[in-house]
Structures are given as structure tokens and as C-alpha cells.
Amino acid sequence: MNLSTKYLYVMLHKEKIKELESKYLEILESTNIEELYKDKKLSGLFLSKPNQSYFESQRKVMIVGQETRSWRDKDCKAKNFKTVDIGSVVASMDATLDFDKKRYKKSKFLQFYLKTSKTLCDAPKNSANAALWSNQFCTSFKKNNPKKSEQFNIIKKLSSDLLKAQFEILKPDVIIFAVGSGRDKYIKETFGSYKTIKVIESKRLWHFEIGDTKCFRINHPCARIKNKQRYLDTAIELAKSLT
Image (cartoon, rainbow, N blue to C red; front, side, top):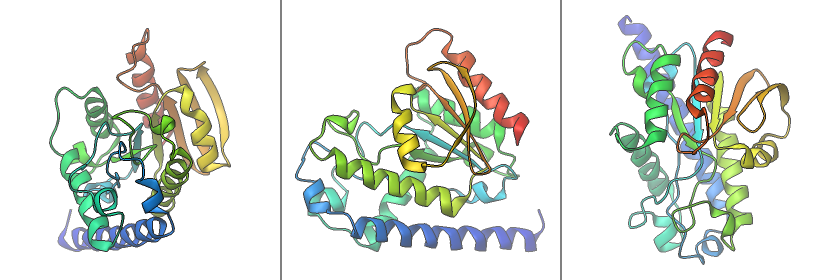
């Protein structure tokens, strides 16, 4: 990569990060944060941030998990002070990217993320972090699915708005939703317009498109199901062959 090309990627990265920061803040300011965090058992807010290598890769990949078990519970301004500003948005985004780079060996999801990013992304440097790590829900309840929280309607809309912002600004070529079939309805609610290409295996592997983006819904890498690895690998190989 020559210096002029590298400079263009640096500038594109900065431009898109600023765009994401601004959109995240707009979404959060339109959300009743005080009402949301009446539920003290919710984690802090998770906000995705792409690495520069995301833009350097010819194939732009987004990997969507479920929700974090806990997240910045002591540091999240929204959770602890019921307010948001651009500084707290930036801090949350930076924390996501820092965590993504740590390589937690015991996390099956992050192992899957690492393998997928290395296989699908062709950034000249740091392809291991070139995929965007995102989550279907931006907060967890008692370190688990927030569905049982009394504030779930707020969580669902906020999470959907954040996910759509990432999709619209970062324009991924591939999205792999590692969330399980029980959450298909939230994918459909979030994106509305989608086209099923093939249900490759009922409840295990769904191939669909959102606009020009090739999408695959698989089970979460921690799920205890038969032949799980086969479906994970199939999704990766299909994504590679089709984009």
C-alpha cells in the first residue's frame, strides 16, 4: 500500500467514525435514558467501532452477536448518571475496539470472530480485526438476554436504531448474525426489507439478503447443538464464495 492510498484510508476511517459518533449521539439523545436505566440490572451501553482495517479490506464484514454479559458497568455514563454526551459515546466506542483486540481465548464467540475476520477480510495489515464486531442488543439484563427487563421495548428500539446506523454508514458486504433462530424476528423487525435466498438448515442456517448485503444467520458459537461447527463453517465459506 503506497502512502497516498494509506492516507485515503486514514481519512475515510476518521470520516466514518465521526459520522458514527454523531449518529450514535443523535439516537441516544432521542432515547429516554433515565427511563431505560430505572432497571439497575442492565449493563452499560455497547457501541460498535470499526478498525481502520475494516475500510482497507475489499470485503467488508460485520459480525453480530447477541449481547455482552456485562459491559462497562462502572464506567458507562448513561448507566451511572442517566445522561449522554459525545465524550461518553467516544469512550464506549473506544472500549469496544480495545476489547476486540485482546483475544480472549475462552470466548467461543471471539474465537469465531477471529476465524471469520481472518478468513473473509483481506486487509493488508490486521485482518484479524478487520470485521466489525456488533451486537443485536446494546445492553444485557442480569448478564443475559434483555428480553425479561421491564425496559425491553426501549432496549429493542435503541438497539435496532444503533444496528441500522452501523449498516447504513459502514455498508458491509457481508453480515453474519450469530444469534440463533429464536432471534430472527428481531432481525426482521430491524431491517424490514429482506429477501430469503435459502433456509439451508431449519433453525440452523438462514441465507438472506438486505439490499446488496449477503447475510447469514447461524447459532451463537456457544450454543450446544449437534453439528454446530459445520453450520458456522458453511456460513463463512458461502460468504467467501458469494462476495
